[in-house]
Image (tube, rainbow, N blue to C red; front, side):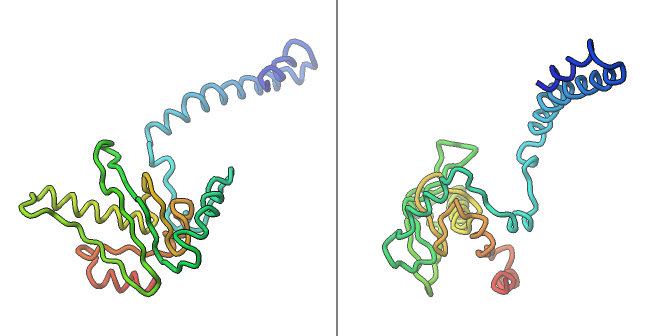
Length: 198
């Protein structure tokens, strides 16, 4: 539309306006077809997920927009879940996560847990007797993925989850700002002390 409007001034009109109209028509055409339809999609494809990278501190401070109200509807449905007056820090039912590289493989499946206020949750991967090193690695991966899910850093494929009465993944940014996650084998006791100080 803008190209057509500017081009309409080129054959007829004041001689002072004709070069400006032609320049604007060419500029809008190049912007629409070369930049927005060719260069921008190509750069987004090359960058992949990095095109949408945001610093962690900025992500925590930005509000979460629920334009169509889908998240709000989900929160209202789970307002009294798992039961009216429940004071659970974590409540999960039927959580499952599929490996993004291998859609046929489940990282964890059908996890249900309730953690009332003032209690702790210990998550441990179980390997069958005589299991291989690969089975132990899978168990460790499942534990890490489950903890990342409970901390709001991974979105489950299925199931219901609330952490500190906040519905996930709708309120994941708020949960991430409230929940610290420490991997003890690498961070050690000092990492745990820093997480508790937060």
